[in-house]
Structure formats: structure tokens, C-alpha cells
Image (cartoon, rainbow, N blue to C red; front, side):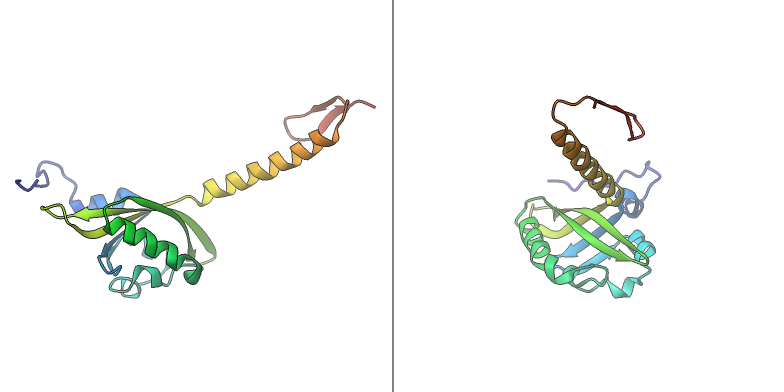
Length: 167
């Protein structure tokens, strides 16, 4: 099987593709060591590349709760090394911010199909999680009001206050 070459007529280098693929990109060796990390992780966490690259992914200094997520990350890495794609929600510590990232672990194969590394792609889903929490809270609030309203009529303004409630 002939190796597929990167098209020379495309003005974007493979490195730039990795940098802009998603919020956080890591290439992990078979032993879980970080071989490559996108610049975005260093910009968001204010860490230096030497703090992460060459160190185990599960021991990276930006995880908020390293002990709790360690077994889950190790399980995802094992699955990816066996050729399966896995995903996991992880929290990242950044200065004055906690980032929730949805990571997907994908096997990287060489020419003969053997898994030689793992690509860990993380997308920042912090805003999405905040909106989901607000939606759950609103649902609980209005569900409680509706459940406590027996044979009553009430009109609710879109801003959230009552316009009319039957006696």
C-alpha cells in the first residue's frame, strides 16, 4: 500500500491543521506520554510546554481532580490503543477558570495498521454545560410550580413572572 502524501497545493501545513482542529489537541505515545500538545492548552492554562510534553497525560498539571479521573483516562487510552475510539468529559484548571472539555481518544495507525499513538482531541464545552445546568434548574422550578398547582389557572409572562393566577 502506497503512503498517502499531504497535498502540496493546499496552503495549510499539517501542523496548522492540528493546531486548529479543536480547542485542545494532544498526541500521546503508547505509554501515555504527551508527545505533542497544541498551543491552545498553554495559552489557556498559562503553563509552559516543558510542564506537559514528555510527561504522562494522566499526570498533567492542568487536571482539576487528577486522582478521580486517572482510571477513566487510563481506560480510554487502553481502548484507543486497542483500536477503539472513546470519549470522556474532563475538567481543566486555568487561571480563575475551570474548563470542561469533551475529549475523544482516537488511535493513530502506521502504514501496516498498527496503533502507534493516540490522538486526544478536546473541545471546550464549558458554556454548554452551564446552559444545561440552567435549563435543568428552570425545569425543576417550573415543574414544582406546576405540580403544586391543582385545578388552578395561571398565566406566565415570558420574562418568568406570573401575570394571572386564579383564586
